[in-house]
Image 1 (cartoon, rainbow over the protein chains, first blue to last red):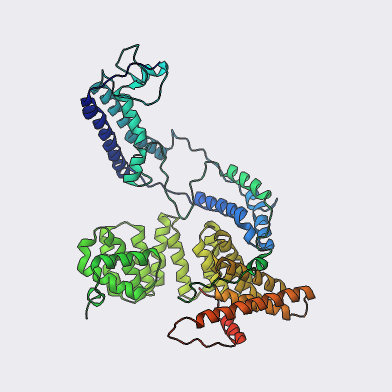
Image 2: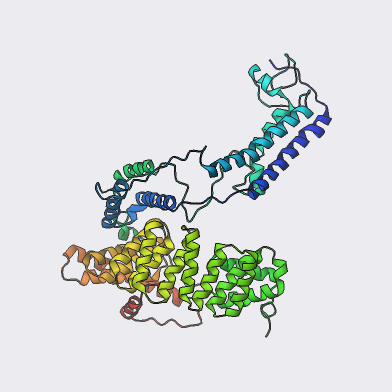
Length: 253
Length: 299
């Protein structure tokens, strides 16, 4: 049942919708810069970096091993998977589960994360709720069920009002998540204003942050390497090459 | 002495962009960098903004290459003033000590950086290059092996190690390093070609076959790799000339060699029909092949 189409005062658009967009956007940018200021450089562990590079090498062996001669591939596979002396079988890392409550550095990081991300959202959400209450702001383009009404229409006690008409607080939350791509445009990738992404530091080379349990990673890598067979890509390379004349265009420029 | 901007009629933005291009593409034209960079720093430092620091670093390294210690020292002072506790600046100070051949002082400096930050790969590689500069190649090889045990993914290091092994004539180990590089960069024709050359140098029927295959792969990846083409011809003709092969293998290899020959003469024809200032004289194929493959591998 399509409810009666409400005609909203155009000053709502001017004084509510647009200001909320601007407020959200600028608070996001502010959050990005503040996070950068109080951000600590994460100390990297040599062991972790080394392990992640080993896993990367094993993965590359699986993918590109077919370009190596059979002997070399067998040698490397043996190095990793040999039942007695293979790397994945022999190396067991001691895993200390990092308890977030007792480890001071992670506690600090958590606190900082909360401070910069959650607190502003709550404060501003509450302020908008108080300042812009008592009227509908906008209509979402798809129909919603009645269950959404108390959530989206806080402050407006009308039973007959369609659930698609939402209050300013929900418009604010829509903005918070919707402006994500705007932040990427203006602040570049990896920006701290983007709440739905976790920040990761770039370590040496292509090493990624290790999953908390390297032993599990080793085991799964061992399994995947076991089943890989060597199919040499260079079996018929001469025949393929000599099918046609070489293309010398641009050779002598 | 006229400045660069007058000589080439460029403005400071173009000079800055040129420096950036050289930096990003890892050129090593140190004299040019010193000329352009020195003028940029002396005349236009204020206009560069935050770019000036990375230009200081670039110019300093180029100055060390050209033995311009005065310029290197002034760049280092500026950087030290701006970034007093930085590992990167400390490393540059170490490089300057290396250039002055004060290797023990440089080593001490690098050790202090590594104590603070054991994962600093650049510093560890500088220590290894000190060993190389002192001519202690076996120790350099040992240190580089230890480094690679921890940082298996560092391709620059694998390449350096393969060069060290080639200099020591340990071709089997050099081939291993090049295999690592081929594995991580399967579409790079230069690694294939270098690997094939090492295999060819090792000799023996199996290695010659492998060499021929990898020369062919290099050609497949890049049709214009003339060295690989000559290498293909050489390895095929050597296998064909060997007394121990079966008739079929001999026939195949003669066919490959003949095909390679036809391609080479085609390349010379293409060259001959183009306008060129130097004349190209059609040399005897065997002579050119021999001289080309007697040289040490490229890079």
